[in-house]
Length: 207
Image (cartoon, rainbow, N blue to C red; front, side, top):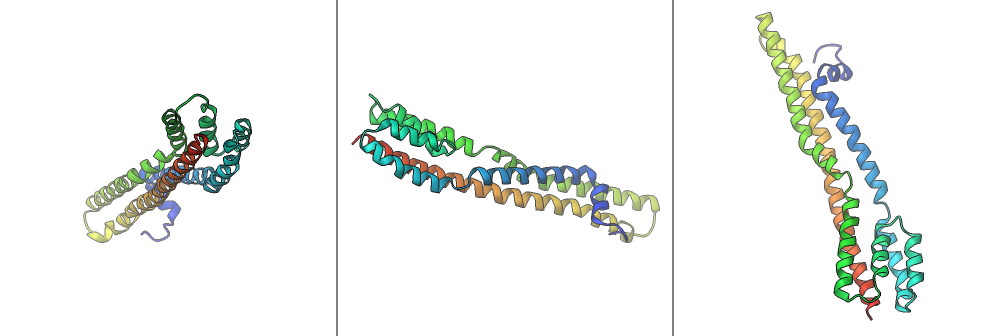
């Protein structure tokens, strides 16, 4: 690395790769924070909601159960339960299960909102970093060709700067993939919880 060359200068010199990577990292952080906020406490709220509406449903107090679900409408499970309770009258258990499956799929898709961004960043960031490194190395050897002497010492600084792009790309990708996999597992667990609690409600409604 050239003497006096700090990280900001290196990033500026490798702008063709480093600037896009910095932008992608900012977007990834925004998506992570937004999803963490959106998925907070959903599991505990779902369990409490199920307990609170089981008794009204068992007593045939459909309006009370609907009112309780509406009070927790910010929770995906509440919207699923609300759809199931509303279509209860005159429907068979199989028909109700089909409605519940559709509602469950819709809410699960909402939980996956913006996750494609993390997946895209995780898969593309290393290649963008590699592109920056290759371009940097090409420039370094071009400089050596112009100088005509000096060997590797002429290009060593340039190559070390170019490798920063690869390191940055890998760092951005690793963070994005970690959270992408975390959210996929978290949403999968929530999906299973929704199915279990919805089945309990359907069984109570058909007793």
